[in-house]
Image (cartoon, rainbow, N blue to C red; front, side, top):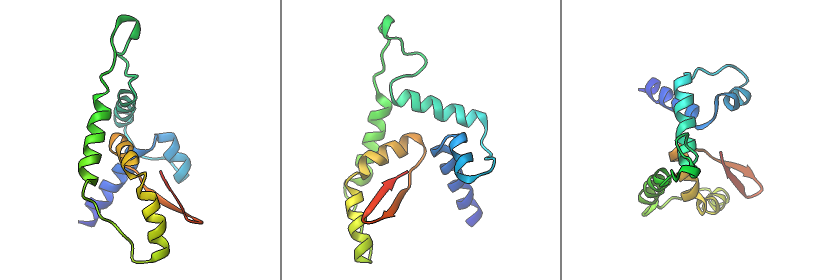
Length: 127
């Protein structure tokens, strides 16, 4: 069971970052197929309305459906969410970070995943 979870987490992290970014973070080669790298890159271009087939001069524009899909999934996921941390100092940081959760969850859904990282001094960031 743990092996499946570890394999899934590695896959999520691999989809979240580019190969070169992962390599620089981890400091060693990362096993990720070129097919997966290309698929994530294509989805990212589609998400931002700059897919290969978009040609404004010919009137071919993006409907930006990818963005709408991610927004709807994030909204449905978070609509009734209630989250807290037992440690008051961490809970204050967490509650502050939750304000940006919807937007960051949309990006995470689109590009693989995301991590909420506490930075200290009452700050947190999404990676």
